[in-house]
Length: 427
Ligand SMILES: *Cc1c(COP(=O)(O)O)cnc(C)c1O
Image 1 (cartoon, rainbow, N blue to C red):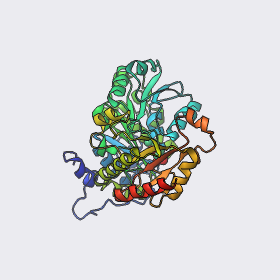
Image 2 (tube, rainbow, N blue to C red):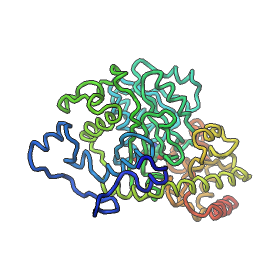
Image 3 (cartoon, rainbow, N blue to C red):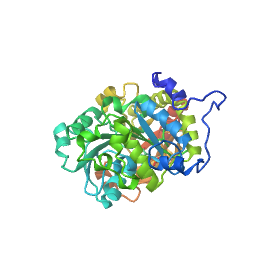
C-alpha cells in the first residue's frame, strides 16, 4: 500500500481485509484478548511474540489507523495516543529523563509550551527556547552536553510561523540527537517533515486529521532513520537493557525501524495509560479517508480570507505564510508549496473592543476554543484565553489586543468573505 500515491494511502492504507472480512475497519471494543496457554501469553509479556493482551497498551483498531498515519508521513512505525498533548509528552519523555535538556522552538502551541517549560521542568528536564527562524549559529549555541532532542512545529499554533525543518534537522544530527516535529497544522497532505530530515513526527489528530470536531486524539510516527546505537551514551533507555521489561534492549531487538515506538508502547503506554479509545480511532479514520480532499479546500479558503483581510482598511496586520509579504513566505514556498492550512490570524485596528464587536457580528464563524474543523470558527485571545492580561502585557507576549485567530472551514469561500465583510463594517 505504501507504493501508492498519498491520496490512495489516505483512503486505503493501514488495513487490508482478507476474504469475507469487514470492508470497514472493525472497532475492536474489547479491553482484553484470549489465549490458550499461559506460555502463549508469557511470550507477549517478554516481547518475544507480537500480539494483543490489554487495550491500555495496544488495540488492533488503533494499530490499523496508526499504520495509515505512518504510511502518510513516510515512517516505519506509529502509535495513537489519547490526545495531542499525550503524543508530544510521550515523544519527548521516551528519550528524556531527569537531568536531560531539550532545544525547542519558542513558537509552539501553548499547551506544549506549558508541558515543556513547567511540567517537564518539575521532572528535572530543562529547555532552551530558540526562535523558529533563528540563525544556525543561534541554534547551535542552544545545545548542551545533556541535550537529547530538538522540538518544533511545522506551522506553529497560534503564531503561524514556519519552522526551517532542514536547518533544525541538520543542527540536531550534528549534535547526535533526533528532531521531533509536530505536524498538526499542515498534515502530511501539505508537508512531510521526514522528507526534510525530521526523525519523529507528532500530531494532534483532534485537528485536521479528524477534521470534524468529533474526537480528541494524538499520534506519534517514527521515521525509522535515527541510529540510536550510534549515540548509545545519550540514549540508555533505548540502548541498554530495560529492567522493567525483562532486560530487553529496544534498539537491538527492534532495530532503528521499531525501537522508538515499541519502547513508547511497552513502557509509557503501560505506565501512563493514555491510549486512544478504539471508537475514537474509528472516527479518526473516517476523517483520514477524506484528508487529501479536505486539506486543499481548507488551504484555498484560508488563503482567500487572508487575501481579503490584507486588503481591508480596518485590518492592521495579517499572519498567513501563503501571502507574498509574510515573513515566513519563503519557508512556505519551500516546505508547503501546495498550501499551508485554513488558519489565519489578523489584528484589528480598534484593539480588544473592535475584535469583540467584530466576532459578535459574525454569522458563519462560531466563537470556539478550537481550530481545524469543517465549520469555520474563531477566537480572540485577549477576550478569552488571555483575558487576564493587560494590553501592555499582551503586546510583550506578542499577542496584540485586537488579534483574532480564524480557522477557515470547508464552506464556500465567498460566503466566508461576505460574512467577514459585513462584520467588519459593524466593528
Ligand atoms: C491542539 C494542538 C496540540 C494539543 O493537542 P490536543 O489533541 O488538544 O491534546 C498540540 N500541538 C498542536 C500544534 C496543536 O494545535
